[in-house]
Image (cartoon, rainbow, N blue to C red):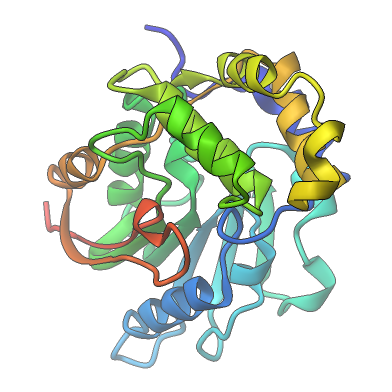
Length: 281
């Protein structure tokens, strides 16, 4: 079986870590972080025991959000340089730790966790088997009744035509080029269950925008956002963007979906926040 977690992308993530600069909604907004913090507070053990939590990735804003007193947090990321460059180690309590690892192989005992949280994690896999395998492992590591909270990058059930996206881009509707990059990836993804090659996304971008500098100043694109797009031209990495129905199907074998919250920011419907409660058994 083809590995659904594209380990060939590790050098890309390690390289990106040293100049990590993304803005909402590609990174969590303040509203997203408040949602995570509220869900975490609902999962503090009633017996007074400190909460045991897992962060998938090393997202700074989640690590630094308010946690209940005594919470023990493990952050798990597959790229060593992300841990070195992004994890806010000196700003978090001493019982917060970050280690390198695969989200499908959580280095904790079964039932060890009260709360698991991540942002955009599903889309780092190459196909739908990746999120399915991760869900199985999160289910194993959570105690019965524990919660998995995740913001997802989901493609519309009916993709926006690529020509329409570029018309909106050139009219100024997308001032955030990073957001456009992901919306374009969702459009190119289409109905595939095998994800989308980021190189194919870049190729379509380059066909429509052969000279980004020609448009950058007029449309307010930042140099970092242009560089993020151009970096995809050197990669064959695949990302998957499940539809809402696919997200519900991914949850169904192991979790009860207790919340599906759509953020109020622009295009928030493409970034649903899920709260999934672990079933017994």
